[in-house]
Length: 203
Image (tube, rainbow, N blue to C red; front, side, top):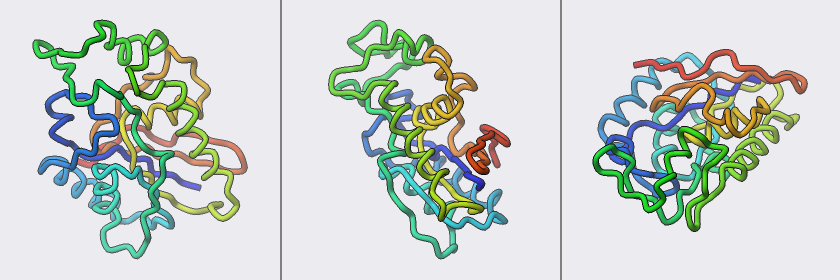
């Protein structure tokens, strides 16, 4: 089984370094352009199944990648981004930082020390949610030998990969945040899992 795991295209929140989380922000013009170029790069792939986060930026990216293929897009909470709760919409941009928690940047630099924002989702829960979904897809007999596309988000992808690899909390960001529309190819066969390539761009 081959799984093409893709991060959504750029949004205005990405560009402005604002916490996006589960806020439903659409792709901007650059994001659509990146998705179209990535679609061209993946044009020769015969996808059998497409999963997407229900958030519009991931769903739209999946639609663009799908193109004219006659495949339904299956939305799943397993690919939804982490929630930043009350901090969504605030900025981590230097000079404009306005998050009430002065230690919030631990999310990026020391995830093992991260404090979940009010009404937000913890990194541990994100890892469990995304990894459980990935394992369920990999273990499903009907998916054996299939080629699958998954459209998701920066932290959700890292949650899935860190969970599948069994990394400690401090190594959650091992490999860094994937670029917008970057593609990672996972290969699963009879319970074995491996990364063929990671964070590849087609633009």
